[in-house]
Length: 178
Image (tube, rainbow, N blue to C red; front, side, top):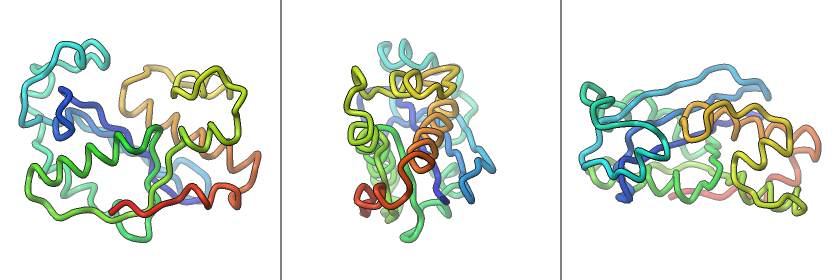
């Protein structure tokens, strides 16, 4: 399997307020690379978001703005590339809103939501939050709401599912993000 697992953290309830981004790159069913950056959002921080992820406004004071980050990561978001996330509507929405906010072209790529796959394959779990799924599958999740740890955990969930159920049952979950 080849895919990229993505995770954003946001500074506020505004979808374009990305303050960190992580990508975990998987080739031939192996994690081969990781990317993490803080992002200086074009919005204020909300205390509740800071409480969740621990990123403060001072932490991103010298971080790049999203357009600079996008120059480095845009190649991963191509029409024939699979980009996954745990609760993909959130992360895909952050990306879409942030691109719109900065008047950057829309990204078109294949996407899959590991919340949906975990609901399908593990209906007996008490819930399908990232930390719960990781606990149930014995997948390490060191710092929940750290974008890099979350993206790696998400990648490992999909790899677990592919190893135990095969890739064919995963194909119906792949959609086009446009």
